[in-house]
Structure formats: structure tokens, C-alpha cells
Length: 224
Image (cartoon, rainbow, N blue to C red; front, top):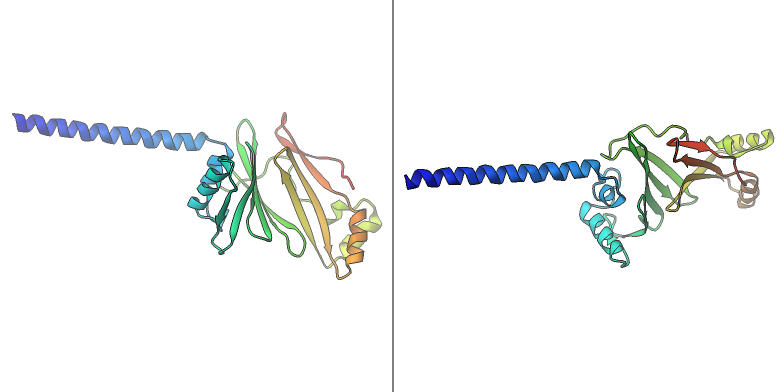
């Protein structure tokens, strides 16, 4: 009888432990699914989206930054990556000496969007933008978001003709912690640096402003 009773208690204990573990796992998964803060999202970003940092590196950066220490960690290229800036919905890395990586969280009632912007700064700044949901699955961007065409930066027809004659160009996207807007600038690829500078003075900056009431982007008037 004692042996039977012992086995019953052991089986009950095992079932209780399994139930507890399943509950913890469920709560953890539920918490991750509903979490939409930058720390949690950055900790779980796939290496295909932020390829030069493994998860332990990213967690080190968060710990250091949140402890108000210089947030620096080795990256897979053998260099150093710096967590330069972080807010409730924004995070920016100085990924390498010539590349920046940042993410911005845009919240809407039915879905939250993550915009990832990687900028290569040699010889001129050029950005690659990608949109994800909070599970880090590629998604369509919010309403109103469109990448500008080169001629969108020019007002006059004559300047548009100049832009169309460029052999190539670089479009840079700028994101900041204190603004939900996305600012685009363009730089021509041209052998004449003086001509580059002259042309850039006549081109506009394109701004997509996030409308927090309508949860969409609005193309604002361009500015020089």
C-alpha cells in the first residue's frame, strides 16, 4: 500500500510539474506575442534581419544601455557595434564604421508595424527599408507609405531632366527617436563633386509624416 501510494504521489507531482511548465511556457509565449516594446522586439529580432549580432550580443547591448553604460559589443565581422540611441519605440545601432541599423515601432489598433532601416554610408548614404509585424514576419507597410522616385525630389521639369540624366543616385532615409516622420534625401552619383553640391541645393527633402489619429503616412510638402 505504501508503495502504491508513493507511485500515486510521484505521478501527481510529475503531472503538476508538467502543468506548471506548460503554464509558464504559455504565459511566456503570450507575453512575447503581446509585447510591443523595443527591448523585447530587438531581443527577438532574427539574425537574418540584424545579421551581424547574435542574441547574446543584443542582450548585452540592452543591459549596458539600460544601465546607463556605454553599450558596445563585438560583432560577427570582428568589429564593434554600438547601441547609440533608444527610446520607447526607436532603437539605433552604429552597426559598423560605415553602416547604421535602426528600427522604429508604429502602433495601430489592429496591427503594429516595425520599420527597419539599414544605411550604408560609403561613398554616400543609401538606405534599405523593410517592414515587419511584431513576430518579425515581412508585412505590407502602412497606408500612405511609398518610396520616393528620384524625380520626386525635383520641382521643376528642367531639374527633373537633370535627375533623369544621372547615371545613378543614392537615397537616404532618416529616422529619429523624437519624431515619427521619415525624411528622404537624394545624392547623385557624379564624377564632379562641385556639380553634386550645386544640384543638391536645388533638390528637396521628402517627408512622410505618421498620422497618429488615422494610423497612416502623409506625404508632407517638400522642403529644401
